[in-house]
Amino acid sequence: MATKVTASQPSYKDGILRIELAAVLGDKSKQTGEVEADFEELLPWAIAAPKEALDIFMLASIIYGTDRFIPRHENSIDGWSRELVLTVPVYQVKKWKAAAGELEKLLSFLTGDYWKVNFRKNKFSIPESSQIQLFQPSITHVSLFSGGLDSLVGAINLLDGNNNNSLFISHYDSMMKGPKHDQSDLRRELINKYGERFQHLPSIRVSLSETSFSKTETSSRSRSFLFIGLALLPAVVKNVDIFVPENGTVSVNYPLSPSRRGSCSTRTTHPSFIHYLSGIFKALGIATKIRNPFSLMTKGEMTDACSDKSFLASIINQSNSCGKRGHRAHWIRKGSHCGICMPCIYRRAALLNFTDTTRYGNMVNELPPFKSKKSQDVGALLEFLHTPVTATDIKFELISNGLQDHIALPDYVDLVNRTRIELSDWVRKNGNKEVREKAGL
Image (tube, rainbow, N blue to C red):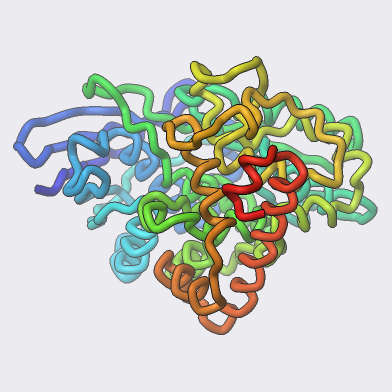
């Protein structure tokens, strides 16, 4: 049975935008929640932006809140996929009705759920702002800045040795510890290096602040849409493109095993996600483009191509790539990264040509036989490297995982093969005999 979620009209007080969520579950029981967004820093942009861009920000905030609001396991069809019927306020109702199909495809692709979105008129009046200046000198790019290694490389490449003045956008959720601290540390380093050319909005909090459920959903696949919604406000005002720095390996997120297809694969910068977003922008009349110049690079190729590798090397350990940083019970030693989730493994393999001073809680040789929950990512990796694959095999998996750009398919096949080489080089250098044998090396 579908879960029906209705978002209230927005309200604003003391710098906070609030939207209430009312859910009717499949068993007819009711639950309530509230989404909060730090809106004061965004006000100048919201005033200057067209209503279509403001709609995307508010809609992305509501979707993110709904994604966290409805616990997946208890309200899913199969233990993962929820059926969600969402009613939201928007300013441009007619345009959104025309874009509804594309939006629902995007959300279903992104979160692994079944979405139906209905629209009603947004009556919220944007409050006045005393902040007049919208960042000077002129902005040449708006870039996402997560605190991870990829966004750090992207920032350095944008700012190093040219006249770019980029505005960097960050998000944090008060229920998810870590990203805001990472962003703050790196922001300080980049300001010291590049001065006023590094323009950065204070990290914007958007979170599910209240819920009547006893627990919230821990997955947050919709966060990437929220990131775009934040970046779009200044991008459309300044008439510049949005820069999304992410290596191609993570973007296509090739499944390491059949069990990791579909809902087990994140799709934060997947080419099909960007395709759906572009379709929505077109339907709404938004000219802003979303660009990822690293879409055909492995993470190692991306770091090796950094325009200032010495500077990158000096602050690598202040970036964070770990996907399980909040689960430290099984770490053998203290650190900033678990060291054995796939994001950590991709990071470690990418930094073979650097002196990596990152502190990792676990090492690959400490984990055999790779069957426990703790070591399942390493086990999947070794199986992936040990299993021969043909170009046809890779094409099948890419298409099964949602890749629609068949013209670029050979390029992505080559990307997967280069990723296998990069990961194999890391295992060969760091694994003991047992680990190397399990990888077929």
